Amino acid sequence: MTDLAWIDIAFTNARPQVLGALLRYFRNLDIAEEAFQEACLRALKTWPDKGPPRDPVAWLIFVGRNSGIDAVRKQSKTQGLPDEEVISDTGDAESDIAERLDGSNYRDDILRLLFICCHPDLPATQQIALALRVVSGLSVTQIARAFLVSESAMEQRITRAKARVAAAGVPFETPGAVERAERVALVSAMIYLIYNEGYSAGGPGREASAFADEAIRLGRLLLRIFQAEPEIMGLLALMLLQQSRNAARFDADGQIILLEDQDRSLWNRQLIDEALALLDKAIRHRRPGPYQLQAAIAALHSRAKRAEDTDWAEIDLLYQTLERLHPSPVVTLNRAVAVAKLKGPEEALALVEALTDKLDGYFYFHGLRGGLLAQLGRPREAHVAFDRAIALAHSPAEAAHIRHQLDRLSAAVPAIAK
Image (cartoon, rainbow, N blue to C red; front, side, top):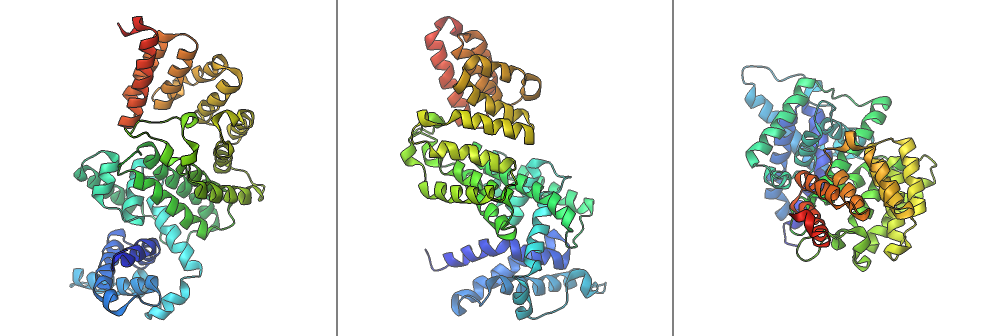
C-alpha cells in the first residue's frame, strides 16, 4: 500500500455516510457532492502531514458542510443565506457530529442517500448509474466502460437521473417506518442489479467486474444498518456464493465455463463459509424471502463436491417454494434446469415453452430452450433458438458460449449448417 492509499480507502468507506449527511444539510445532491469533493481535497492537503483525524467521517462532514455553506454564500451574493434549519441542523462543532455518528443519523443519512438513488421514478439503468456515481464514487469513465456506452452518454444518463430526482421533490426528512420497509426492498433490488451487471458482464479484465465487488460492499453496508433483517443476510449470502465461483467461470480465453464443468477447487472457500454462516443465521429467523431461497439454492451447489453430487431434488423444491412466494417467469425458467436434471429434457421443455410470451426477449430463455431442443434431437429448432440467444447476448462471452453450442450442433448434424 502506498503512503496515500490509506486516504483513498478512508474516502471510499466514508463516502456514503458523509455524502448522506451533507445531503441532509443542503438538500441538493450537486451541492452535497461538491462539498464532499472539497472536503476530500482539503484532507489530501492536511492528512499526510498531520495524520488521520480522530474520526475521519466526522472530519469530512464538518469540513464539507462549512465548504458547502461558503459555496452557497458565493452563489447567492444578492440573497440572504437560507435559514440554518433549511441547510443544516444545529451544532457546529466536529465533536457534536462525531457523537451522532453511531445514532439514528448514521442509519437515516445513508438510507436517504440510497433511497434517492433507487427512486421509483428512475428506470433501473439510471438507478444503477446514479448509485455507482454518487454512493460508490466510481468515475463516469468506469461506469461508461461497464455499460459499453460513451462517457458523454453516461454523463447524460446520470444528469437525467439527478434531474428526475429533483423534479420528483424527494423529501429529505427522516423516512418513516412504513416507507423505510418499502424502500429497503427497492434498495436491496438496486444493489442486486448492480451485482448482476458486474456478474453477467464479468470475465478477465472486464471493467464491470468491479461492480460485483461494489455491490457486495453496499450489501455489507446495508447489513450494518439492518443487522437483524434476514432478507439482507440472504442478499449478501447470495452475492458471496455467486462471487465465490468467479475464478472458475471463465477459461484462459475468456470463454464461459458452465457450473457443472467448473473446477471446484478454484471456488473461494472463505466466501462460501461466510455466506453459509450468514444463511444459517437468516434461516433461524423463520422469515423466508426470495433472497434467502436463492441463497439456499446457491448453497446446495457450493456444498456439492462434484457436479454429480448436486441435490437437484432439493433445488427443485426450493424453486417451487420461490415460485409460490415470489412468482416470476425467470424463477420458473431456472427451475426448468432442475427439472431437466431430475425428469429429463422433455418435461423441462414443457415448462420453458409456456414462458415464450413473457421471456421472448430474454437471452437465457433462448439459450436454455436451444439446449433442451438439442438434447431432444430437434436440431433445426435448436439452431433457431441459439441464433436468437446470440442476438440477445449481453456480452461477447455469452455470445461466444452460444456459438460454441451451435458449432457442436452443426458438427453433429451437418445438414443444418447449410
